[in-house]
Length: 455
Image (cartoon, rainbow, N blue to C red; front, side, top):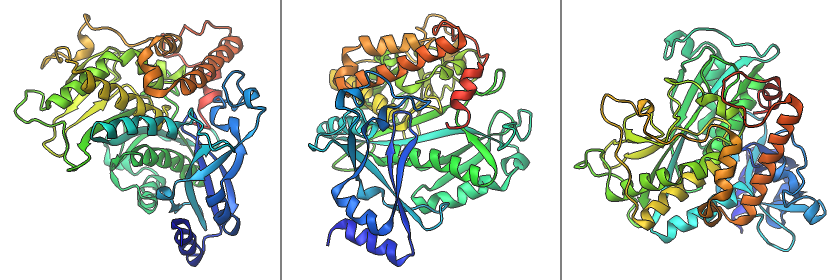
């Protein structure tokens, strides 16, 4: 009996009627087919056909010329092959289970630009160095009226006990997520009105971004069921807090399972491995920035100072204004928190970017610059290099970097650049605006239409 036979037998005994075959796309959303349980068993073994370009559609689901999986292959199908480790019953979808899938062509070649394939490439590099990442994503999101898209309350009352549980939907999310393997740690209202943060335990290897992918799409589905719109759009309104996704990553020794980043005798609490990981992220910060803040709207989050959103290439112990915040939490939990990712990032691609850059620092023995000084937040240091201010600038850094080709492969690099530059072109054409002019937090109608509801 195959592993899938056992999975499907269990589902049948539990009354499951249908299975989602889910493919994470370039933007971290789920492109899926829903299959009756009886048919799903065969597809799990033989592959389920889906239009091959689905993984590289743009944020409006436009078919993007030059994105490698469209006219270049006659708009042909890919085959979805589910990962049995992701098999789960979906608690918020009656009688429904899900499988997260990888994609291959009919000749058995992997679609190397699909996000799980990109991350798997970097995981293989880590394994060859004796490491496995432990990754946790901290999403912020707004919960809005489902019809008017207005905020449910106003004011800046982070952690207020009444607003923490303003609507039952928040507790429903917390209660349902463990059923799909996501154990919640904390939930609270965030800095802006109608904004929340719900944190969950990290995952090793592919499980980290798989959890983030499941959580984000699940929050949107649960909110919709309750009559709300949950949006992870990075900056829905000028003058209000943006939605970030701080990514916490540590490395564990594959043999012992021990955290290799901690050294409690060091002033920053980091081992040599941890320091070199930081150095790699500092070195490649510009080159990977497009993967951490991948849309025009993401840039709006960086336009104002003192908003806990980093604007320069910096690091420091417990410095919330720095790009990299060291969490020296003892021998088991010491980690690096990358604070630039927006909630619109793709968790597989962002995790791949952080891991690849950090591993490069370890492999090359890089040394980090001086950390921020106590009492002087990194954002106030005018000597530090700024992060890319526009998406166009970030994409240019990504393209020019030989390291990103080595990290992620040419196939992904070409597809990603084609899709993102196509979006920039649409924005410029429809807004009559230079795509480089993203230096204020004034939100265009184009951005609201593009990102608010679906993302």
